[in-house]
Image (cartoon, rainbow, N blue to C red; front, side, top):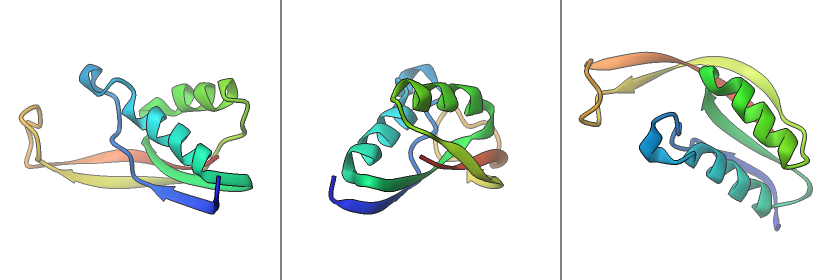
Length: 93
């Protein structure tokens, strides 16, 4: 890769039709980083064990550097509330 750092806010990937988009984004970010570089990425806290597992499977180290709250407005048909406050992890991989 060519970059020292990649910062991203991928789709959360928790719905079946997303097909793990969050992990695909993180993997693409890692490919864009030079050796020793870092990806910073937001993921739902509820997926923490899954993201940690995927990072380990890829042979990399990943850690949560901040726990945040993220307000998501109603944007899609499956959103039933005007907005929702979601627990989010800010990862460094």
